[in-house]
Image 1 (cartoon, rainbow, N blue to C red):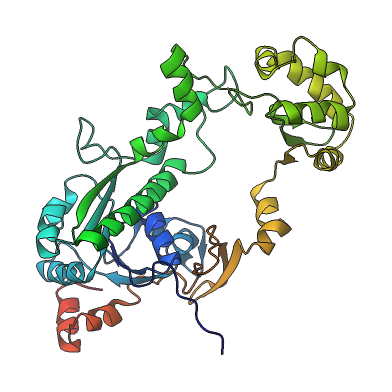
Image 2: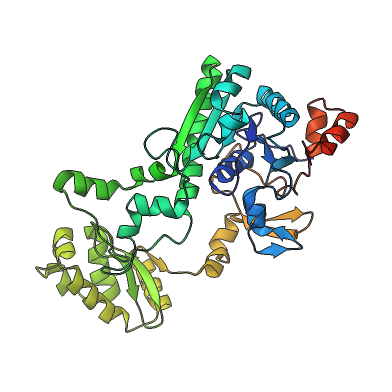
Length: 400
């Protein structure tokens, strides 16, 4: 019999009071790596993402993708008896994650001050639009609003065009990732000292540290980044180029790969000594002329031919796939990045795999996302709630 491999976060107990994307993405990562996650949903509709399609057999596939490896319980947090159950869970938990609008947890009696008095070692993570303090703290936060506020939409898209958002909810995902590493750091402190703490994560802040090149230019010279299409801000040629039948990405971001592109791929050795293109700074200063020359060459063959030539020459390149092409790429399949799970209503479903590949303690997809309230009785029984009391709690609307 094959010995089960222990996961890196085995034994970590997480109480998940979050919904939709940022918080659930954080707790999904923790669950994928072995944490025990109990997800609390409101009775009736549950997590708001359950009302987001597409649906299969009446079940939201959006919810199913981001809530795997968790157990689910339906509690009415406004009911005092349900709140007492949550307090029991707080005593059990190492970590609590919530993403309510600032002030809601206090009105529910589930704010950090209240629950840390119950469990002083609790790591309590709040994810909100603008953080727990500051002039915007009371505002509701959304991914798209954060993209606009932080400036990313002003630098996304073609020069002179309309501001564009990124293709995915980058700030929701980014907030979930930021919360995840913050929680793990706080857990190290917790295990060393026995102390818990409150972590304050803001959608509108999590992405600012990603603007490394933009910050370098602005703080040094006052340069405000503008939209550049697919062009890189400081390297050339490093962008998408049109070929005979579509686009490819070329990443000749240093002098060595630029020269290989000219010599081994395009056969244009004269470009290496052209005064406009001698150095990266020269190429950036003459990017319009460089792009026109390169696209005239790339138009002579199809994308597959150019990718083959670049790969043979050691010039970084690749296709621009749509999502279907991406998830069906044999490389991702070989790396286990497309997985399957058995869901009680969706049947055999595909999902994105785990991108962290540990040699000794790998993550694992254990269970599909729970049905609404699927584990309510199981969880309550674990916390000592008798069948008679569960029946009464259902009658008064405290649980579902």
